[in-house]
Image 1 (cartoon, one colour):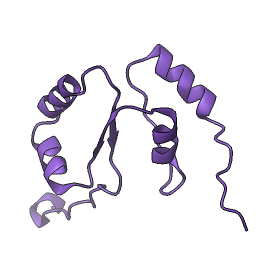
Image 2: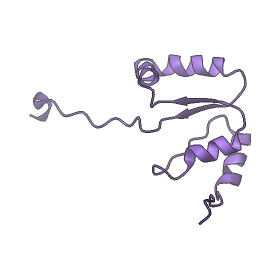
Image 3: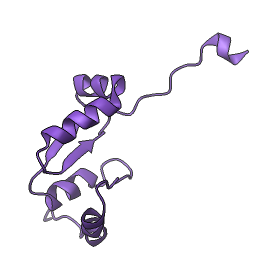
Image 4: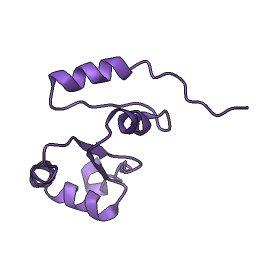
Length: 99
């Protein structure tokens, strides 16, 4: 059996969105090809993953400052932030909060 990718139905919409706006957010279930789609469409770009604990910690500590720094370092190439598996589990409520 040959391993081939299915056609990406959102490809045209994504390209159109990238022409008309500075920020495009791609969301969907895990392992459906969101990152692969972006990498296929954009030959160049700065890919940042929040799977890196240091990057995630920096983003959580100063999101605005980190975004500004990343954008300025990107030198007119797209900045792609992949949140990957960096989804935080809900924190347990403090017993004092539940009264």
